[in-house]
Image 1 (cartoon, helix red, strand yellow):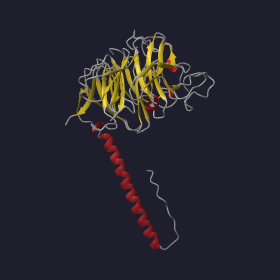
Image 2 (cartoon, rainbow, N blue to C red):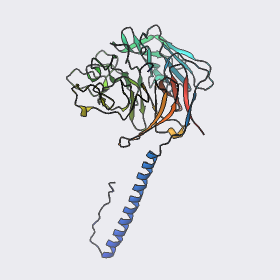
Image 3 (cartoon, rainbow, N blue to C red):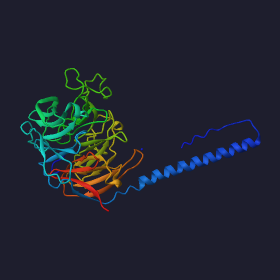
Length: 415
């Protein structure tokens, strides 16, 4: 985050030695079958194409989701799988607060206060992320990402799943590493459908990735990490998933790495319907990008910024780099905030589209790109005055927009 900133119709050819009449009947039946199949195929193709071409979301308005609530520099909104109708907000200044997911709710409760542990001297430092264990209702585990005087800390705490009382003495450091600069700390962490914990890490900061961290597989910076917090390995507080890309090598590559070549990943999310991982990567001077993340791929930074050359002196073959699936330039916005493929029911015209925004311009878009073959269509939904630091999803699948200024919003289709 920058502060202030993708028929063959198989018809069996049956050759039968029989009377001329039989041949004609068989031929007639086959032709009819072919004709019906071709019509069906054509109708399906036309229907699919039409659907893609006619993605026209309804006009929406951005409205306050919880008019009575105000937060201090909120960065994230989330829920657990099991706390029905309870929402949590992460504040950069150190607190996580929860409340009843009702529009007229008036009260929040402090879930945990880490203000005495965090270092927030830089604008991109502080309490940055929260993820509840998939089995939170049984083990009470949750994980936070914050910056301390020593750098980034990924820690696990335990809470009572019923009362939500946190046992502060249960803090356990999962992973920690220094931060050479105050910016580009990433900070998002989330459990994937595979049960592993994914962690977005910026390139270490500075301008242009001066240390070349994002392309260095010996470093964690500029990466999306994936670890198994239910296992331990060689004295570490976590294990390495067997299909992580660099688990069987002789180059001392960091085994935690899932994907690399990222600048400052600011929010990623999982589309479980299409088994796809969306990630928004904040650009440098020109381009903001959206990536479909796949195991082991290189997304280019700092050799490229989006599809543009950035540091052509790099040694990696450009054909090995994966381009973004969508990008926009700084005339539209200067710091992308990733969102979600809309899963709710209240805004049906948005179904299947990826909703995201920009921290600086305040714009909110819907990106329709159902597959790699489809070019995609990007539609501006709203141009707001919000500093969009994050998006969230309620238990019933409705979107929440997090405004760094302190309020939470949602979108509503107009009649």
